[in-house]
Image (cartoon, rainbow, N blue to C red; front, side, top):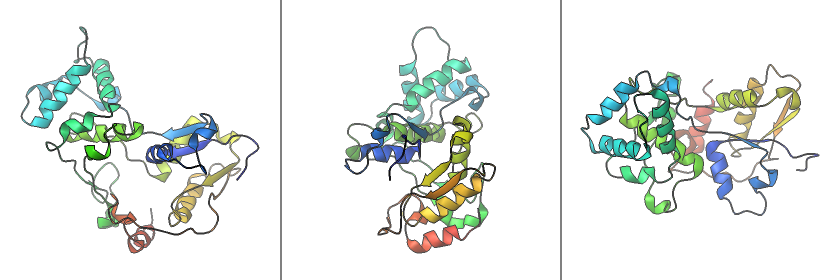
Length: 261
């Protein structure tokens, strides 16, 4: 596909990380010269913490090894006389931890991440999904990432680590974004009036569904047309080890997309 001018490439964070890892002559995301917009995992913001005193005091009263490690790591990023009881300072140091590609390795064998159960878990539970809404979560194997996690991957894993340790009553949870949330966030970052066409790329079995969801979210922008990025069907493979249950088989996927969002 050719374009009269470099297109804007919009990706979710995990797709961007995967594309930058590819050694493929057919596609190099860097060819767009920085004209990319990646919807990243959430950073920490002051509104995520109502009381920095409660946050700090919780970690000071160490009970579990994971709490001790997080407190030590947080203090490692801390310097000078800046108080962690000031929310802006605490947020700054938490966000430094978010981008540490090796933070996960300190929690191996001392912390287990909770699975996401989308049929009951906040903020937007969908009981109609049942167990198709299960997303298995576990810490990465250091042997697979001896050079550290990918950039956005580190942010996502590290946020999950911190959220697992700090109770939700003290630290608000990051927002889970589906197709609709990604598009809504993207539209806040660009001028939709300058967009005429959108090409949707995805797993061959997912493309129709992703295109449908995209068109639904573009209702207010009738001048924008959305198309398949990949013509026809390519061979489809399913990964029995995929984190999301609905990605593990064709039967699961068909059952998942039959449920109205």
